[in-house]
Image 1: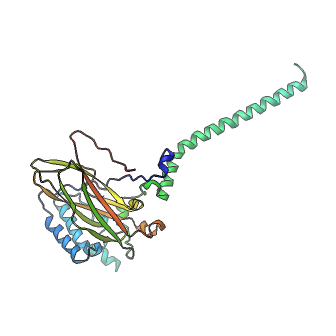
Image 2: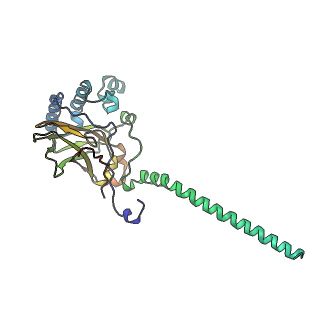
Image 3: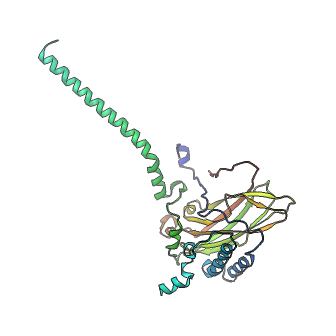
Length: 90
Length: 201
């Protein structure tokens, strides 16, 4: 943005993800969870909100198998799926 | 030369010159300071207005923990996959689209296969359409910007875990945006070549 030529031109700077890259699941250890999630998406018109339980289970599988850093589920946006939080909110 | 009137006149002129010099020096120092301050001020301006697609501040985990989904603002996320001509992978999204709301984390999958008989290392970057929505698209974790090695005939799932910033729902420029397209492109990683983060113009 140092020259006038750039002001009229859009510039998109890709940003790396907050927690880096997923390690590849070479052995397909979490494949069954992924398939369960995809089936849920297909059955619910691809609405993400209705398949959050399945996506949580997939991420839990990755954390259990060291394919993702351990992280509290609340910090991954699943606070309402944790039993303590949902009871507290009611 | 020893005239009192003349001497007073000279002193007055000398004082005026000193005052003028002081003002000129102050202006020069002020402009120097302003030019240094311009960089952070411009960055601040870009963050508030989104000019140039600059990143909006605050992407920490704590923010995710306290996000409240905006349930009545549904956005369709469409997925696209490409490979550079020299990379012989099969790479495609596993879902054509998903429907998300701002402030809610979402998971999506791509899948890549190496049909050749040699291990291949790929590295990907992404693009978001419309351009202005990119500042609200936050990836928590994905497969981009790092080398991914696929062994011969190997096929793997590649998840993308992301959310749309809740502020998306309050941006007047985003009122008409209800479709965001996420495109990933894989390139072949050459040995020893450090890829810079690309910018598109």
